[in-house]
Image (cartoon, rainbow, N blue to C red; front, top):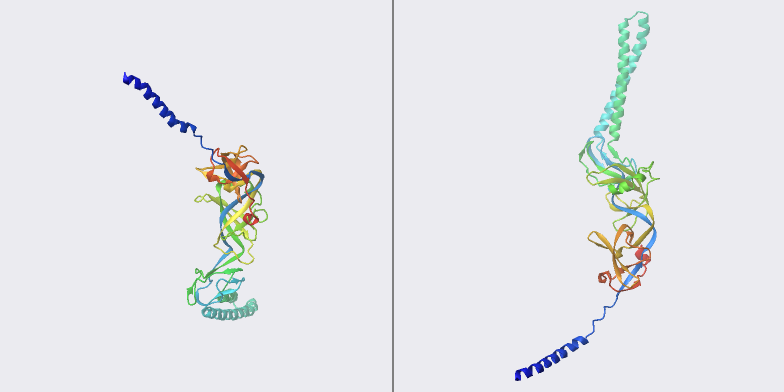
Length: 383
């Protein structure tokens, strides 16, 4: 009987304790939403965009002349300062001329004998001709005199040619530059024995200077109709080129593409193009690497956004858009060519929409954002 009376009382106490424990929990309010993320935005701009290509190029002389001697002999003197500018026919080396001077004198002596021989045979013919007509001498003697005269004339021509050749050989002992240009470091020194296969140095014409670069097969196919039009590979028709040097500066002279190779390189899959740049102060030198940039066409009405607004992930590109509802939206976009610090967007955006350029690491789809216009870049930054 006592147990029965205590059961309702215990149940009442238990319910009171549970209510006392749960009352504070029921009184708690849900946490407030996080504050909006402050971001900077830039509007999507529609504009005419120049399509610019950029490639790695190698500089070389427009003419590179390997200097080889025309005769064999010992180098007697070096007549130029390495690295200096030389004119056509300026002397570079001197080969010991003594043996060639002696050969010239010998040839001149042979020529003198040949001239004396032709004089004698000519007089013989003059004397024998009337005598043979009078039958004072036999016809055979006249024929022999005529043959001797012809032989003497041939000997005279050979002697004159030998003199000319000896004079050339003697002149070739002074090795000269065949072109205007910068002369390189000597590969031979005084006392070396050189021959017609020896490269003594190299002279390069660097004004204009040649740049060689390769375009991909796809780039070629995109512009094959333009490249293969009549008279394309000329300085008047080829596209204008800019040269970006190693220090990031743009060379002050404009170049021209003037030559397109006949075939695609099967190893690299590229088509070689050559251009020329004026180089009046010889600033550019053979062997330098530089980036070659050319404006290929203009794309009208293209949509562009800053490159920093585009995030590349797993082979795709995404941008964050600040919506009119104050929330961020993540969109996949299809990008086109880059133009300076801008990126052409082919699909996924509309003109006038605001893309987020700062605070991207804090933004997810649906994140509340407070959008502020990004400051315009300074003229120095644009340059």
